[in-house]
Image (tube, helix red, strand yellow):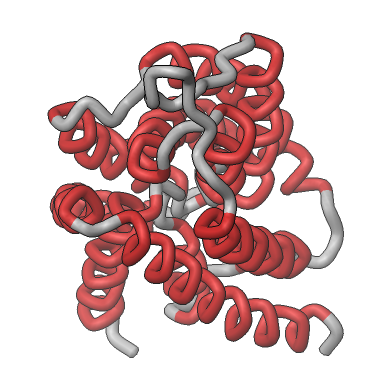
Length: 262
């Protein structure tokens, strides 16, 4: 495959990465990681080269959610900063784990499957509300920081932005409605991806041949994804998130398990 064709395909993957990021609040690497892996990146490059695109797509999508009042700044501050502090540790651990990156790919599939399950389960769990009918939020710093620490470690280790953990945590633990959880997660994802990107660059895991095209088209993609998510009903959004992530996890996980034990 020529370099030109590869770049075009990466650009297309970047756009859908952005759409996924804007719709699901997960950073979009669940699309870009397997995409650039298929296009010739090594597993560790697939982890490191997706993180740079998370930053601009997060900013693009977050601005759209912010216009609708769907970003909770206190959650972003506590979770994002705690996550950013731990992302470098995750990146270093990723470089030390044996398996040439395939272990990280399998774990990424497992996280996607978990997020799909938790998102689908939201439909049967009533939203916690105050006496006035407003959502009851658990904004204790320790809980928000705990979510951020885990998300940061996962972001650096797997290159997925951490949103696969934050979206279900923000709905199940913090008590945010789904759209607000997605918008807030997307903002956190951008903060957490910055130190992870820097760490993977120093470790030599960022291949800019893949990273730059991903960044270019992820920005408009995230804007489109955020618009679609805001317009959708909560039920439709849950079903789309669960079905798409579940399907990707099944296919992606199966392929990577075969490669790991080959």
